[in-house]
Amino acid sequence: MRFRGGRGFGGWWIASALLLLIAEKPSHGYELAERLSEFGIEIPGIGHMGNIYRVLSDLEENGLVRTEWDTSVSPPRKVYRITPRGKLYLKETLKFIESMKRRMENFAERVKKVVQE
Image 1 (cartoon, rainbow, N blue to C red):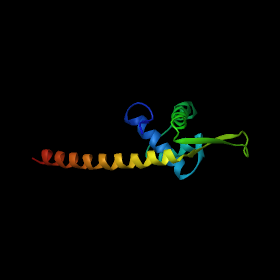
Image 2: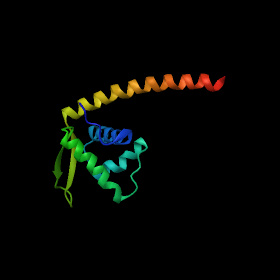
Image 3: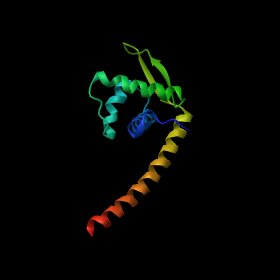
């Protein structure tokens, strides 16, 4: 699976965080933007929602989420739900993060040795 959610680590991190939040609880865009703070991602105001919606659109285009309209509220809201492909992507993301964690721990240990000399 090749989806990376935008340019660089920041785009990938936001896309992965959104996907996890959707997996935990199907949600609409503004709710997801608020919940991103759980991962230290702050969305400063409504003006930046366009960025979130672009990532959500990319997730949908790549088959990682699907949408449906919640017409029980006014105005109606687009609700994002994870797909089986999205769960597979999260599983692969976990493997990547665990591998990166090991590499970072190794790096940190080597830095400690150098700075203690």
